[in-house]
Structure formats: C-alpha cells, structure tokens
Length: 72
Image (cartoon, rainbow, N blue to C red; front, side):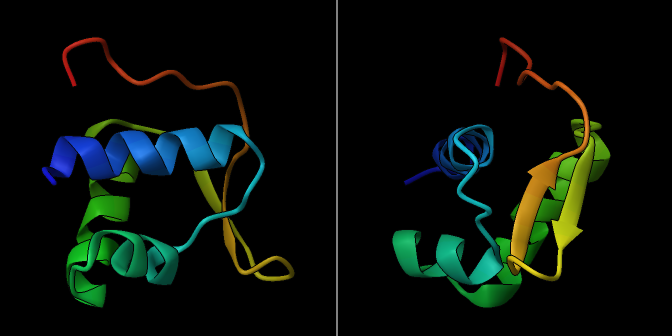
C-alpha cells in the first residue's frame, strides 16, 4: 500500500468519527510506528489538515471541516 492509500484511510476514519491513531495506522498497513507518525504529520503539516489529538479517546479528529486535495 502506498502513502496515498494510508492517508486516505486515515482521513476516512477521522471523518467517520473513529479517532484513529498512529498505532491503528501501523497495524492496519503493517508499517513501523514511526512511519505512521510521519503520515500523521504529513496530513497535519503538508496538507494543512486541522488535526487535533483527543487524549480521552486516544486518537485524532478534525477540529473543523476538511477535505483532502483532489490530487492526493
């Protein structure tokens, strides 16, 4: 699976209210935890997603509406 597939999966899970985290991402795609963290950071910094972490639910959510760029 490509980074694009991982980012799309993460985005869909966040939009669905599932509060995914880097551990979920690394388990789902059988990648290292560090690579999963890089994917989260890519979503946050490069794609400028309004990504926040909820310590109560131990996962990520968007604090405002967000759509992935079409070219991703």
